[in-house]
Amino acid sequence: MGGSAFLGQRVWSDHPTRTLSGVLIGLGVALLGTIAIIQIQIEPVGTTPSLHAWYPPLAVVITGLLTTGSLLLGVWQWPTRPEYSALGFALGIWVGYPALMPNSGYRNPLGYLLVVVVPLLAGYILWRDVWPLIRSDVIDGISGRVGGLVAAMFGVFFLFSAGLFTVNPEQGVNGPTSAFVTTASFANPLVVWPAVEFYLPSLPLAGAMSVGTALLIGTLVGLIGLNASMMTSVWQRSLELPSSGGVLGGLATTGATACCCCGPAVYAVASVFFGVSASPLYWAFIDPASPLGALFFAAAVILLVWSAKRFAAQLADTDACSVQPTHGDE
Image (cartoon, rainbow, N blue to C red):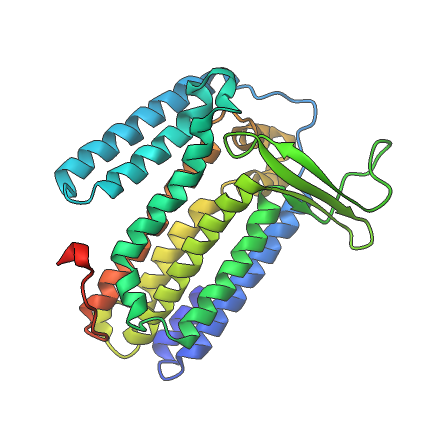
């Protein structure tokens, strides 16, 4: 990916599609390699999370910092845009939800509300700040296809990274011997959701998906696809208008924000090098009481929304398109 970006500036300046193709190929290879590592990871069966007692107080502290910081920053920096503070506040409550609610709040209505409100708030912010640019045709055919392809690749990655899909199903005495599709209930994210579980030994492929997980992954994939589309538009203009920012800058920004979503794969990579001794990382993401997985999700949403706003401002500054303000901004 870095090599393609470098060649795009030095050699392929007149052929931006070559740069985009090279970056997409590099991204695809990286994701496939990471999925392969995840499939051979060593699960620490029989071990227990040694830091379990620290998870609840850590979650409460992180929640306090996120909620307080969001409110103070909103009042100081964006007093006329309360949706910014509301998104940060909701994500802060998300991180500490299992520790703050009795019995982890598996069936509390607040949990269902949070899972629905976070995507709605993120969508509203993007509708206010980014949709005017999209409506002005700043996202052309190439940008749209790149965004769709990147979203599809990251969607597949999340399915395997989170353990929802696997091509290496468990074998054993109690393991399934024939194909099946059944319904189940999964307590993730935050609360209990109806889910579908399946096993196809002929592929082989096994997996499960709940309503809440589909909403969570859809939110992340949508944000990443939007960032990829807008980044592509910035790249195309940066090759013609240097003042709009370089290709490497756009790659670094979106790459950094997207990598915040890849937390569940951290243990898989660490287990290859350190074996079972990396088990604390496993439990840090698997244990429902741990705030680390939720913190990665919160950071990803905040950074991806911020990144989309940054690209929108950068595209607007190039005067490459004429954008009419929304009614609320007039």
